[in-house]
Image (cartoon, rainbow, N blue to C red; front, side, top):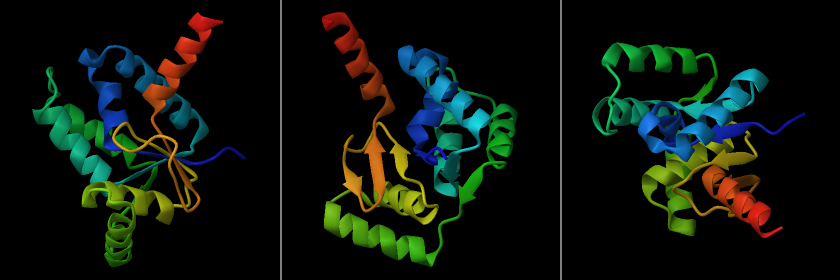
Amino acid sequence: MRDRVFLDTNVIVYAYDKSAGKKHIQAKEILIDLWKSGYGVISIQVLKEFYVTVTRKIPNTLDIDTAETIIDDFLSWEVVVNDGHNLLEAISIQRRYRFSFWDALIIAAAQESGCSLLYSEDLSSGQKIKNLQIKNPFALKQISERNDVES
């Protein structure tokens, strides 16, 4: 069985932000793979951040109806709803690892869902917290591209 993958907001945003260049293409590939495999996991926090970002912050914003349709589609994935337990766990993670509270809440949700992998551009790629490995999928592509050039 493949590992379940939790996505941070930036990965989903890049998939819908055509101005993101290579990151847009890479993020779309990640989403397509996760849609096919059924191993993608997100949280309500990620969906909220996605909505605000794609309707207000990217260069070519999406209209509200389009953003709503995308979010409705993501509701077919496993969606972690943060509760009091997640909140306390996030505080513990923040204290121990010195992440921002919001990043710690993403980590807590990923752990709650039993994911072994968290894709995020914002967190330290390669870091492992309990059974959760954090990876920057965009850095991984860049590293493999550099290795191909050097070979």
